[in-house]
Image (tube, rainbow, N blue to C red; front, side, top):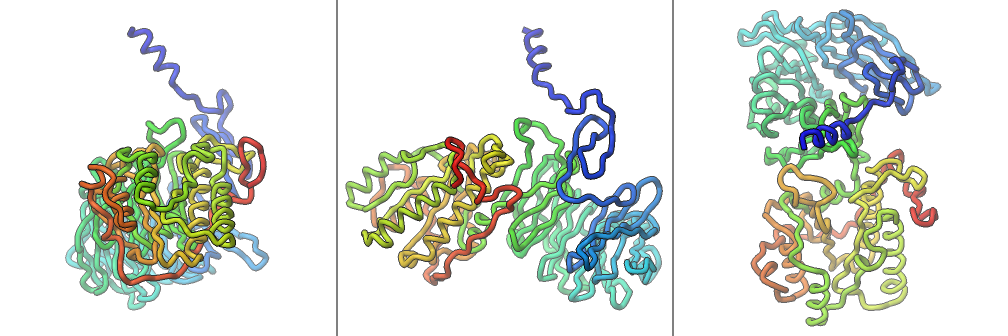
Length: 549
């Protein structure tokens, strides 16, 4: 038995692809890394100084600066897009690295200088130092008797001219008035602060630290007296590595557990987690998500994955837009207490008209694009209830199964497993956009969920899953915390249709009526576009026939 187990364990081992080949750097082509892994970067590559760590992008997006601190030499690498749309690189030597960089404007950048307790303001056009903010000298950042400051990550509020500096040695966030060239105030934010992000409105700063693996919520409306309003613990045994903020959410990357934690900014509580896994190696860790950036126009979260030399894209723009526009639950669970057969019989007994576009048609087959299902749904709805003039059903069921993913099929328009999720997201967006533009929208509620949660394991419970409610009468960006599952959803549906309970499960369940409001908003839903590197709807093919959808 022992020998058998040993052999089984050895058989499960993995191997790096380089084999006996030596490490080699090939700019613009596939390179072999020390240790045997291969890397073939997408896009264009530009050299930086050794050991790049911090990175900042100018307000216009035409300039990028990295802070480089390898081989005992610290410099800034400036990558600038010129009028001919080509990029030019240059380098400026500075003091020592601190890892923080932030643009003040299109030609001025702040660079933190770590153990020297300084922040240097540099003119990137000519390389000259415009000013040095010294943390360890009286009247600078050394307010209140602080010494040996260590300047780290930074954020800059251009509208107010305020620079926020993480002082790692003294566990504080320092507010610098960049215009007056003096410290405005500082506040303790927990042991070993690492990174800071500013809310879009500039009223709050969010600092991640190792104090209980948490996020400090700092009110900075009064620059002279910043105050910590509370902490949100992201969980034990974590290693918070990066933070980014949107209007209502704070996202924290966890370099130990390979995940991104989602925090409700108003409630200061964790509401979700996105796990980052390598297909077929889901039980192993080492992706090491670190820095992040959020692209508001597309709804995409970009995550630097230090362990695999990659940038991950967390993107379901239509699901996210539905959550922003309508209501959703963070406490909803999949179950099997109600069969669809029993449901149809319940509707028939009470003479409720219905239409099934779900199970029993194409069925659960991820080789069929969800785009095909969406196109067919819209066409049939138009044919029967638009131009056909039939009476609109009271209840419609639509099934889009590709969120469960399948093997990558680049030849069919699915270059990654995640491409299936993007297919599902775009199909859902198309359907909701169509329904929100027909006359029946004024009396409509769309309940969106998964039939099971097998597409991924949740950090709260393996049964927890998606629930979204799209309706003119749905509360905007409302989060329901009610412990609910399928019976709760059906209880809400039956209540709208005027039906009695189907069985004990929905009769005794909670309901989701708190997601509704009497103040209607009939504005149609706007379809969000997908990242075409991940999934291009125009290239989706039926895996059975190879026909474009």
